[in-house]
Image (tube, rainbow over all chains, first blue to last red):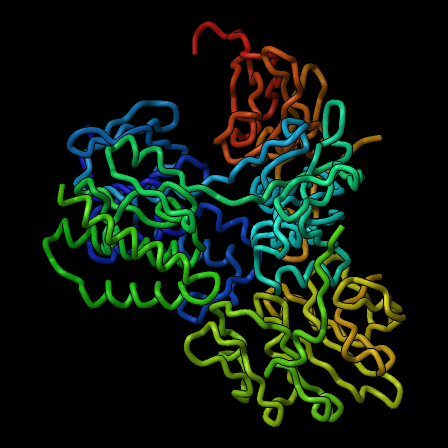
Length: 363
Length: 160
Length: 110
């Protein structure tokens, strides 16, 4: 059985940032990722990020991904790809299937940075080939360079739905419309504006009735809804599409935290059920830390900062040293981002979560 | 079915939209950004410090229309693609607009195009005046196109 | 009419980098693939989106999550069923078959 100081599960922005911080302080790090290439969702984000200069605003996600990856490699982080962690057992022994073989690794500290998964939406015909997640479509167009369809209906007007609609235009698809069940869009107006000006309609108070087609998507029937979200089927119409993307939110991927015995809470503004953690990103199980979307669905910028915070906190534990100033700077940057209409609710959710951590850990 | 309609009036009352006087004087930036998104690269990139966001960075950007020369550095950096530069006096009849463009195929200079409004509706015919190639601004092409002056508050994009 | 859904040029990503052209077989049909593509990407690039039929009702399924989490995209690859085609890279000469239901193991030693 191999022994490592710090094992990081998940090589997206949170995991990579945690690895870099730990390596900077001389800790031995093993970063594992189930994919053939680390970077998480960053290599699909071909658009420029918001934020300030410190958050790398104006820089494309793909560039940030490359920077982080190069940095992690520069600091000689040990990286295992095509490796999936299936459980954390007693004494922080991690079960990993690496290239098809079972390996056990004992870790002094673990950081879980497994990200999030797209939510499904069930409607008649949703299992037809040609219905997929918006993120799935983004993977196919930006990573695999393949259009999974030419005429698209996007369900959901949050930032993912709006951004992927724009990226579908860039990939050469015809986006027939974005439908949103609420009476207003969920994402930023600037994202809606940049698809509206190229002729993409955004239908409010609307829903999907059915995906049409015999063996794959050939059309979609949509209709308006009333104030209690009841479909007004008499006003339905069918549109000619061959691809239907579902963009109705993300949920943290936290099975491994559950399996490891961490305590959970429910926070709707963070994406649902999330593991409790303190201000150092440590869960209720000693030595297990979290960072990024798996600890609450936010953005790449917050994932990076949380990764740094978890990395430094893990090092504190391993080296028995304190890095209070660095951690405070990171917390400040996190708060600078969790403001305004969109961020304030998440800041409050995270504060409630930390408070609950301390309440529950007493017992 | 109810549609989202982008109305120019939500932008014109913000401090990021130049006054009528300033719009008609010469090249100037128009920032169509009205929500409290934590974001300030427009402030950072302006060489004349004509854009103010300040703290917190969720503040809506404010344009100092006296300082702004319409240089266009803010167009490419905006993650929301929400900044344009209008030159009301391109010539006696025409105005020109510079927009961020991230599609293929790129149009050619002198090509005739169809000008669209904020909701993608056809407004009038226009002509491509200038292209700053994508390599110059991290894959964002800056395209300047001309159209009849009277549509200066309406036109925000084009199609071939 | 040959269908090709590949995005050869892109305003931000540029042209697809030079890749080695290889061939894979889908139920005996020869398909053009490029080294580095996943099986699902190659099939979708060729306009093939139905990847399998379900066990009970024989309903068609294809890619849903594209990141190896939902298993809707599984097919029989070189005799082994339940291979997640959205994350498995193609290899020259690979034999892909539509999976019917839960699939049958063809290879004895693996």
